Length: 141
Image 1 (spheres, rainbow, N blue to C red):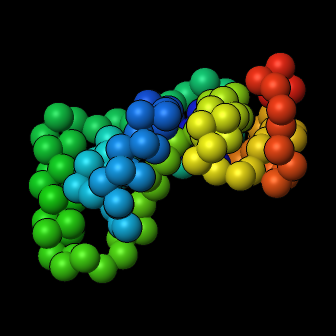
Image 2 (image 1 turned 120 degrees about the vertical axis):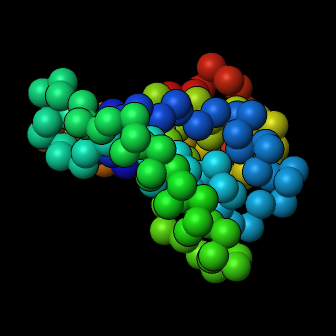
């Protein structure tokens, strides 16, 4: 999803450092940071409200503290089982830039041939990826 139009709105975009940290840490599942961010720091998921610029959630500080505590409890009781949360937050531009960087670092063999803007009223963007090797950073879309 495009983080600008879903509950991920207040979270920072995932960047190259986040991806490299997960890679070098050999991450195989969510860490406690992912669970806390998703369960306690996200907002409503009304796409049209986000498109209209309304990103606010009516959360008191105490409610957020409770959500953090619940997220920690959920993580600790998961015993390594999968927890359904978002670990990555993107916009079309940040996704494209990340894949181009990973491609030129030879960490992935996919290149974003085309990353489409998120259509009005929707919360997901699409991308066409190719195993075609790009030869120059100037070819980045």
